[in-house]
Amino acid sequence: FYENSTTIRNAALFGRTVGGEMKNVKLLNFDIGSNYISVAPLIGEAVGGLIENITTRGVKIASISTSGGVVGNASSQTTFRNIDAETNFKAGSVAIPFRIGTAGGVVGQAVAPIIQNAKVKMDIKPEGSNTLSELSSVGGAVGYLQANSAGGKIENSSIVITTVDSTNDGFDVGGVIGKLEGTNPTTISSTSVSGKTVGKSTLGGAVGLVNAAGALTIDKVNILTTIVGNTRAVGGVIGSVSSSSSTRTVLDSYFAGEIRCGNRAGSGTTLFCP
Image (cartoon, rainbow, N blue to C red):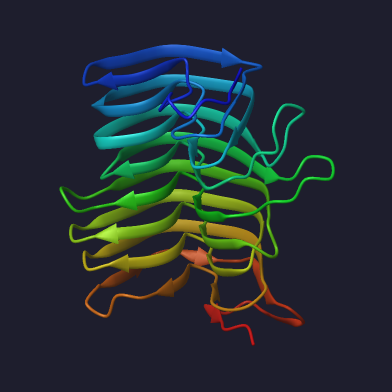
């Protein structure tokens, strides 16, 4: 299904849900795209509620703006539990040349989400002669997390990023969260991340960019990734912190992958590409 209209806000099986529960759904071989907002196989916009026991396989998504492996945009605190999602975010299709904007393996953009027991496998790369452009705020669980009204929580999850391939135009890319903002605390705990990310700047094994006044706690998070940057901040745990008032705490966690900046390589916490 491909939607090429600027009058339809969401492209998904369910365009918008408010509260309630969505349980025990399996989606197979689902191909969806739009040149407008909030693209996902299950729900375009979720306004709160519980989303539980969801499995996706063979899902391909093409979007110009916000897309997620299960939900495009969770605009109020939503709980995701027992998610098993495999998604290919693609930069082109036979119908329209799409580009990827904000993307997350569970949800593209979310206000203080609670994600428990998620198993995610995601892949972002061009198709054919297409190229990725405008790739910003991409995370293995959440692309852009806003923690203003409440705090976010991601726990007991496993994330495999097969490939995020956007050397010239990939910003704020993280193994768990792409970009974090807000004044309330956010916690990532008991989670593993593996795979490979290639981008331009602000790339992190757990979080790409922290632009939040609220505290961030990373507890029992194991990262085994290869991260390749092109211009600046590339970190094994966090790519960059732009808020001087935020507190970051890392507990009982490790990074055992490799980070590279152009022809520079290392295994430390952060490299600043020349």
